[in-house]
Amino acid sequence: MTSPLSDDARSLLIEEGDRLSRRLAQQLHAPLECQDRITLYGRSLALNLVQALLPTIEQITWRMEKPLSAHVISDLRGRAVVQTVTFDGERHRDLPTDDLIEAALFERGRLHPKIREELLGALHGSEHAATRALVACLRSRPVLDATQRYLQGLLRT
Image (cartoon, rainbow, N blue to C red; front, side, top):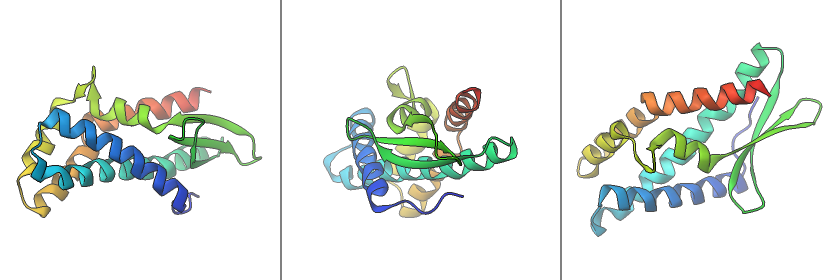
């Protein structure tokens, strides 16, 4: 099963989260005093989305008797990629995390309305409200649908 993220993998996902937070700041029209919170949102969403995907890939493929191991690596651009490998060590498929984030949180380049609503509601609330909003985003229909599409694409190959 998936081991905890390596320091390199965590750094790659934090970079993805920083890129996401810049987009969130633009789309939520966040004031400067909210930038630290937006950075936290971007990093949390990127890290948690991918960390939830890794064991899911392994559990589903194991049950289908096509076991794959999933890891976060760097691609040629220095971006985070979820790499799947057979237990024989053969490389199966690479899933760019920026594509997953785009598919899960955005719709035609704009934040999905449900995601936008959750994040805007938490922007000026308490830390507890922010935590609830992040969990709600990760459990939202757009995120679950995007994850399901990624898993189905992975299983087709």
